Image 1 (cartoon, helix red, strand yellow):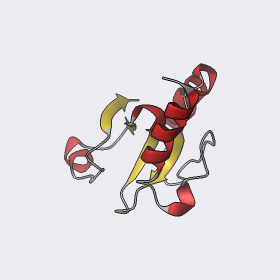
Image 2 (tube, helix red, strand yellow):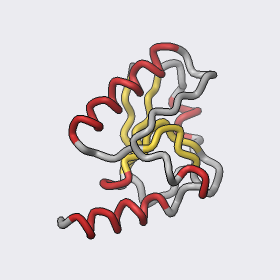
Image 3 (tube, rainbow, N blue to C red):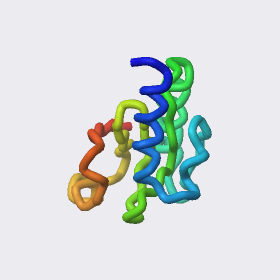
Image 4 (tube, rainbow, N blue to C red):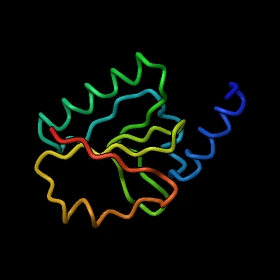
Length: 106
């Protein structure tokens, strides 16, 4: 995939986010309500994505107001870090169907 095609894919993925979230690629934003191990895992994963050159958005808020821990727009993937969250709560999230969802346990 050439650079222009990759950027088109990223732009398409970002179009599912609320407008104010689209300019935060590569920035690690954390939810202060999350516990230490949860935020530590997000930082750890984002450092790997940064080193690999994979764009990411943390605490991404979609147009339907659902929020994910990490969005990888170039590969249409959502990464959810699960610490104290139950499967029931996770399954109640309403992410856009175009994204693959990956769960990572702390």
